[in-house]
Image (cartoon, rainbow, N blue to C red; front, side, top):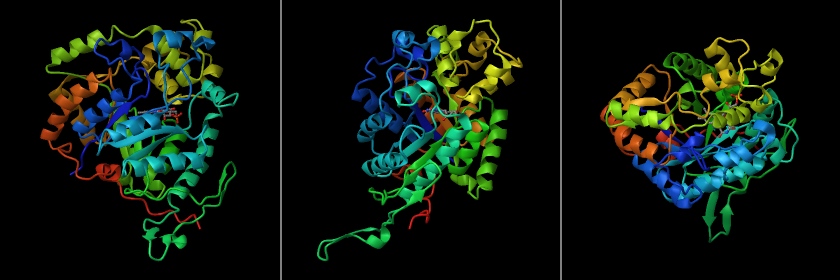
Length: 447
Ligand SMILES: Cc1cc2nc3c(=O)[nH]c(=O)nc-3n(C[C@H](O)[C@H](O)[C@H](O)COP(=O)(O)O)c2cc1C
């Protein structure tokens, strides 16, 4: 029977995606310690989650007013550690939990990314996943030695070549290449290890690759593009998709469209799992959950929102008055997360929204769209999404750490299990086994 996929949405930083989370009275204060991440990993594994996944960004959100003082002062994601290193700490504290992290195609080299994640896959015995992002803004560019971030669609054109190299290298050792015959002195069969010799318009990489295949063949590819070009990229390459569908009606439509787009690429749509973002606030009763959410809503600052909007849209919201509308040119020039711009335009029905409209309608930096209720209510909601079908599962975001995940695991997961919608125990050890994803055929591009 089809089962819900659960992903823990994690950040190797001083807060969750919601900056105010560090001010929550029950939040752990040691987000730069290894024990913090070991603890989250164990909680997610106790809840039989498919994977924990770390997002990434290569700059503080300091585009707003062109200065980092506010970011540091208010703790707006100002600590951002390398996600793969933190991921491995979580990996050593767990045995089954899948391990995902984000690396940028715009600022790293394909050979490097292929090697890092193939190594994580071996060291975690087949639990690795790579979230492919093309990055967002000019401050990431400045940190990585460039002046400006490449244009939106161009980033994806580059990323297509990037994927050909990464997947090519991951396919360049046959599963049985290693012989380890001491008597004959043969370590591996040279006929089963190939060079890639990739020469593209933007990238080249020779090989042979230096990391053999893992128990699950190769890491799972995660993708979360939401723009038209981003969705096209996801349909071609993504095995696990992160989306923010918002409403079940929208989800049903987008889910079907993305599965159809994958099929149009000659892929089996069942081999692409789609998960949508949810921020649960769960209580033992409905009233308790509502009270938790009300207390939480006291925590965010407007500056959190302005800072995160500037970061995501690659536009300094401090350069305009709160009630000044965006011009047509400014709206057209947004090069970051265009899905946020489009969502604000669609949901507000306003052609030229003001800064205040963006803050109000986007809800960025707050938990405006939280799923609030008892375990039964939340399970009802998840079941409705899953059976619609508007999703294959959920990327579970946290209002604070570790309480939000502990509540979800202790209250909601047992209810999903009781309904037969979610596993009681892991039935395999690799991430592909958890997700029901086959080991991909070796790409025979390499020779
Ligand atoms: C659950 C989820 C996680 C994401 N994680 C990241 C991330 O770690 N880094 C990042 O730059 N973008 C992240 N994104 C954003 C998308 O990957 C993508 O960069 C963004 O939507 C912009 O691309 P687009 O213009 O194609 O939509 C995430 C989105 C979702 C829904």
